[in-house]
Amino acid sequence: TQLLEQSPQFLSIQEGENLTVYCNSSSVFSSLQWYRQEPGEGPVLLVTVVTGGEVKKLKRLTFQFGDARKDSSLHITAAQPGDTGLYLCAGVIGNQFYFGTGTSLTVIP
Amino acid sequence: DAGITQSPRHKVTETGTPVTLRCHQTENHRYMYWYRQDPGHGLRLIHYSYGVKDTDKGEVSDGYSVSRSKTEDFLLTLESATSSQTSVYFCAIRGTWRDTEAFFGQGTRLTVV
Image (spheres, each protein chain N blue to C red):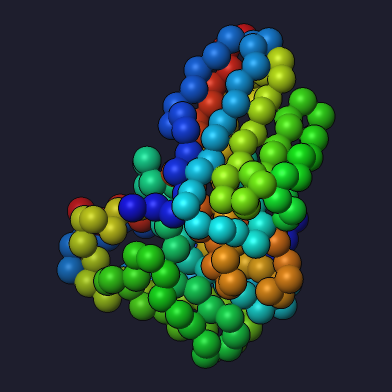
C-alpha cells in the first residue's frame, strides 16, 4: 500500500477542457510537491506547497495543499496538448520523499 | 540542469546475475536516493543516503544493496537479479534537509530475462 494515492490514474481529454488531479493520504507531510515527467526522462518539479490551505498558481495550473497537510490537488484550466505527461505528487517526511501512484494525462488536439 | 548522470541508461541481464547501477552527481548534494518506477506504482523508494557511508532502507529494499564511498557516487546493486526487478530505476539528489526539491537523473531501464 502506497502512502499517497492519486486519482485518476489515467485521464484523456480534449484540448480546452479543465481537469483536476487528486493526491490523498492519511499521513501528514511537511511539504508536498508536484512533478511532471516526460517519456524517457526523470520527473521535474512543478511546485512545492508547504502551508496547510496554501494555493499556488503556475500559469494555467493551480495547486492546493489541504488544510491538514494530508492531501493536495492539481487543477489545469484549458488544457493544451503540451500538458500531456505523467503527473506525480510527492510528500516529504523527514529525509524521505514519498511519491504518489501517478496520473497519466493525454490532451487530444 | 542539476548534474546527475546515471549509468548505464539501458541494460539487459539474465536472472541470477549481479548488476550494479551507478549514480554520479556534480552538485555536492548530501542526500541521494534510488527509486524504481513501475506502471501503477509511481516511484517507490529503494534506498537512500544522507552522507558518505550513511544509508538507510526505503519501502522496497529487499534484494537491493547500496554503497556510497564518495559524496558524488551512489551505487545500487542487485546481488542476484530476478524478473521482478525489471523496472526503470531513477536516482535523485537533494541538497539539505531544508530543501524541498529533489532533482532526478534520466533513469536506467533494466530488463531481467
